[in-house]
Image (tube, rainbow, N blue to C red; front, side):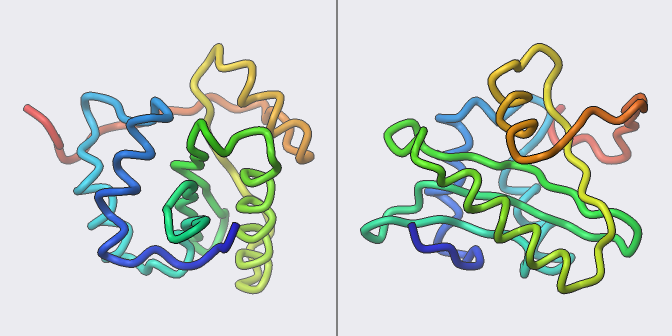
Length: 140
């Protein structure tokens, strides 16, 4: 797998990847999520490709206090080969270069397979409650 920064022509393939991986939810518009990310710097938005096919993604961010990862996805035909771990290691390295002291992520409750994956990479559950407030409705 070759890892590189997301480019605008990748958008349809990335959104289809997210759809395949069950990452799309009705209240988020993936086109808007991508546009928002690119508006705030795309250097941490990574895609993995093999034979010129986008088959993985990770959208990282850093606010100067904490790093975040969203939309980690690997196409079903490419799973169980270490690609997700490779993407996470690359994202962690890029965040370390920026001086990021800690990386956070959110996992949907009950998703045991993903929880176990991140635990295998050294991530642990923080004793916090994740809260959110939608400021802009993506969908009516």
